[in-house]
Image (cartoon, rainbow, N blue to C red; front, side, top):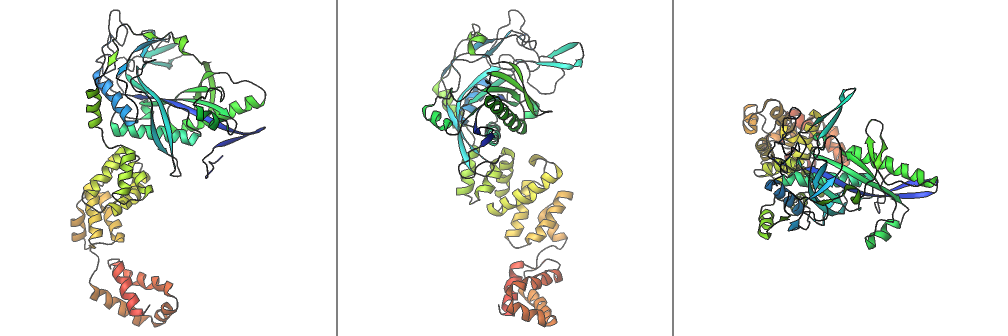
Length: 501
């Protein structure tokens, strides 16, 4: 069911009428740090199993956790990037549960007093419209290890390399109303943490994963409860754990919402539970009944003092924040004069934005945006390459754009030069010079070609005077005669003058 273009309301049809979805997300973002949250063990991805495990991570008796200041800085930095309140007082708690990949028998997390409070971010839908999602909190916690079930039919293996790695759990308010908006929210969050350099954001490597809370309600109910901030009567929610791609997030929400609608309309009741999404079948299945806080028996971790931050510590981090994507997008539009679309495409990824800014250090911004968004990105997509893998450097592209703006080459010739740069590299100016690719700007030479064409095609010349739109035939013939090197603007001006149109 497509989004309503007017109101962006997303509805699902049921046997008894329409339904709407209410979505909240808990995104776990792995902190970009060389060491774990409470130990000095490495966080490098891809190491052999159980090679990055300290005695603290393995929960050896008598081993005490020591807070990693770098992880605290990264959490504060992320909170500032989410326009959120930084809590100068926060506390670590023990969250008790038992699983083979949790050596301590509890997870060190933050319950009542998180390091970051309420905030909000602006997200962009596929159609370019924007919506705001409130942030409930961000807290620090340690990751668990990994259970591996497919190495032996009779045994489960445990890899503790991930055990103790610092996570930021970013909890949204239930402000997301469709699968597409959920993907847009996570995409925006990923872009922000990448700009901040606080998380790599690679969902395939587990650097970001989402727990998705889904419930359904009748049209109009959501607006009523959003006014009061009381969402608990909107319907029982189910949590879909550890979804690790934007596409899977959308599929999981769509399936889960339809499942709940079918149950309610058949007179059943939704059980509050934790579910898993099966990417192979596209369905969610029950994992366990949803735990409440009291089930985890939270209590303050006796081995860690409360975390108390100085205001100067927070302000020092704030002073060194990079320009964030929304601010950069606005600058590209208001200062550089780019279209909203071009600015959004260029700022959607930090590496793209960095590449573009390197190009415009030596070239016209608007023309550079056209070349980066169209020619460069088009070719990269065709070859399956990322912007950091581009064979054409920002300096090369800047020189190429400069040759166009200075009328040394035309846009058509520039595309030929771009192909040479892509395949062979080199300096654009030298390529144009050595291969005789400069465009003809000598009006005398162009006039000579035009005069010869008119003399050889008198009938066509008379027809152009009656139907000026057929001028393109003459333009094409001039370009053909000059090997595509004639300045198109000069060709048009001379033809119009000679033909009297």
